Length: 214
Image 1 (cartoon, rainbow, N blue to C red):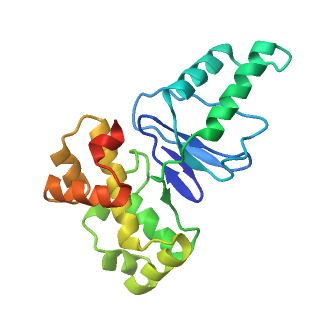
Image 2 (cartoon, rainbow, N blue to C red; image 1 turned 135 degrees about the vertical axis):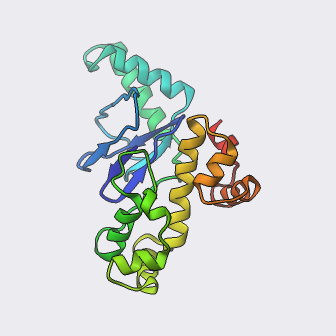
């Protein structure tokens, strides 16, 4: 998972985080993993803001080749051609709308931190927070539910309930990617039945969880 001040980007199969220069970020891993970092100059103009990008099979192989070579030398024709293709492929990569935006400050930011806990176990809705209602969270932040809902809608363009639902969907995707059943993932997302979870996921992302992971 990659975090910036403004959002959380969950890294699942077939995706990568694009972070423009000058944006502070952190990488958090829940277990053993291999991370590949590319620094592009000049940066592709297609992605002006941090984003979760689809990594196509071609781009995956290009990244592996670039990492194997190390720093590319613009004086070497083969390196120059490879850098151009990598940049073109990154520019053409589709942005995946799965990131979780984070409020900048105030009660809304405090609520997000309560709900996400310490954030060290993927995008994990804190176990204590699971038992809290939105009213409980609002009281812990010293405000009302209505004020908190308005703050989320104003800052992020999404209500607190919808934000929390998206966070739980991302949690469920991590669970599925780790081999959990759809039933277990549905419970992770707060749904009692897999059918209700799949229908809600389809409304949110226009696809089913299984198709998304494929």
